[in-house]
Length: 103
Image (cartoon, rainbow, N blue to C red; front, side):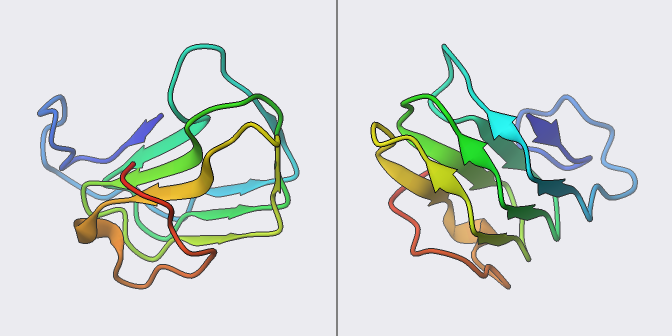
């Protein structure tokens, strides 16, 4: 879970920016969440070449203006419903597979 200063939960102070995360060549798994990676108010994240090893609703969630994300080349467990869940506020600049639903 990565949260920027303007996430909707209100846990942040609203100052600064969270951006330019690069998540590459990792094995990602979770036993309890609906996704393995979740971004809220994080801009320009790159998520490539990872293995999502456990069945979840979706592998990656993008929400609360997590714009400019680049997703590709990931390997998904056959039990994952869809690779990317994204909300309307995060679609600007998104490059990657067609999102399958909400984050």
